[in-house]
Length: 276
Image (cartoon, rainbow, N blue to C red):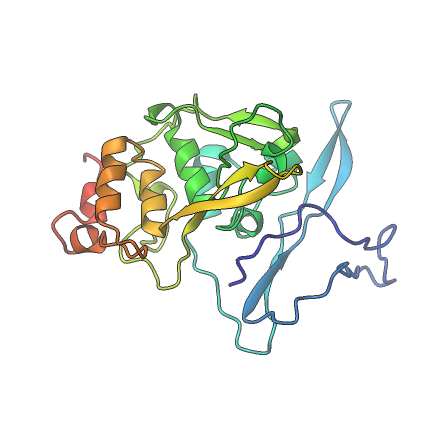
């Protein structure tokens, strides 16, 4: 799957009025072509909404975000791994863009969320504009961000701040999760929280805002291996971090499966159980 940074806003105009093609369809042309070396499966998504009056106020009524996976080089399309279910999200949040609003009501499907909240992305575009902000960027990769947000007040490392929506710092340190975080299946599906992870899951880059040459640039300072990032986003204490680091080689290979794989002495499915 393509893991590169997505655009941060529209880069072309589809047309004016309904039925820009005259048959109820629209054509969208990107401002830049795919890179010459583009290969494998890529994904595109769509936001669509229209204004409606609700109790005297104008609100944006959004459609569910459609996504399309396509091959950039003619090879077979590879389906993205399903990790969580939006139906599970709805058990607490209700219907996105109706009962629970994120990003102005127009982004409401998990398959679409991960286009921006992928392993390559951080809050650098906003953090770099904020005078006095900590120069260490926060990853906005979905697993990292959602685990940390839902741990909220129970995190040992506080505060948890992302520079983002409305170009401002958003502090999630006071979030209280209403369930038992040991119940991974409250969000996860298909045993996606279990070890081993599929081959090819990427590490999460760690970056900082570098202004040493004038204009702010994003500089990579390291990375978090994928199992560590998923686990330490909840188990964020210094002892848990030290344990994880001692079980990881200098090349980034993680030995977590030796003890925490299924059937092992401290399998994830056994450690994350809830009382009957």
